[in-house]
Image (cartoon, rainbow, N blue to C red; front, side, top):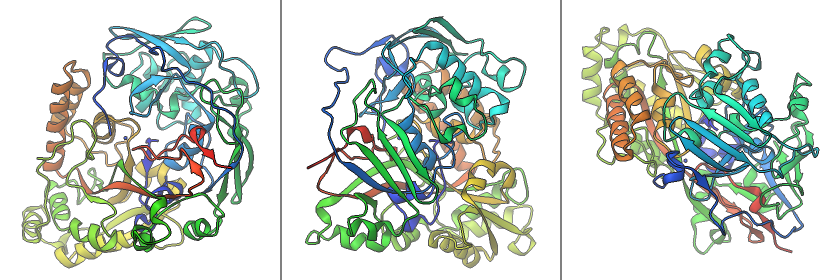
Length: 548
């Protein structure tokens, strides 16, 4: 998720893959006519979901407690993993990461207006039918300032009237109209090719009005519409999802999913049969890649549309000075860190857009490792030399005061190459993830997993001056203007070229320090069928079956 899919790099080198997803918090094919939102879309004959034959068995996974199960609020991957199984929305991303029907069986588009035609067989877990009015309520609730969502503006903000609700001027979104029980009309502020993709994010999921009206932490007993129901939640111990046999889509081929929460070392649990899937850390990579070893046939390696990066607080000294940002960027030997710390489990990042995202630029000119150039930039800054820099603190996420080896290596290189001492301040993940803008110091480390496969989900959402997720509070009028043009450009290839231009400007301006692009390494037991991570690091658990 996301935001949204906000993913913090917590001891990344020891928790890559699925384990990383649990501890912290997408490869786009070119958008076809339906995906661009320029034409109507219906499910072609022969592509409708066919209910699976109900199977037996329980899938056992490692996990940690979600921070929230409120889809309107969720802003990190840990919570999103669970929410994606319990709730659903109008549209979803299919196996090719293209926007596909979900509760909306089809839609029509006329310039800025989308008309969604809902399935009439969708019910909440308690049996009440879902109507268009439920979506209107859910989105207005998400945008209500009282809900406290930090992501509603990001994912629903293109809809006319959303900003009025978020700023407290009205309770109703003027651009959302209930035409009938099963027809919903949505008007956006300008034609945008990625609008439908945004509606696949959890903020756009439908929630039960009566359920949410309980107030407080109502989401501990969620009444969703997804393929699984929450059966049991024992904090720090057990989280159990059970099959929703009334699900309108592909009914799960397993009876339940049991997450063992905070229950040990995942790899050890996998070896002893306590869990069926695990992420692979650097510690175990030699064992699982050994073709003669017992785990090699169970290994799955998939690219992930994500990147890890260092953010600069561009509103405060010393990183309001572009030359200081450039100096800190060129003083880091990413190749060395990727090789020695991560054992090449990740790929060095010279830009923001990961391979597989439309607009990825192989010719991007990043700020390469160059110690002499880094020192020159520092000399050109208003400070002139390292000794005149103010105190610098980097905010990170985690527990217990222990920081990752990767962050240790980065801090050491700044000291060694620039003569700068950087102090690390650690915050609990829930505090870090939901309060970063207020809590950050001069720098912060961050990870981002795409919510949908579009360059806008990286460049605009993270670096536009007006973006909610612009944690660094970076502002560049030229970048904003290019991103705004790209958002409404009807020529797809031209829009991608505009995004490439924006990314190059961001790199020239050292808006952030990109570090690496992610990959997922997981082990899956031979008797588990259908468990696969998509490029966003998510698995559709209703497609999993356990062999007898």
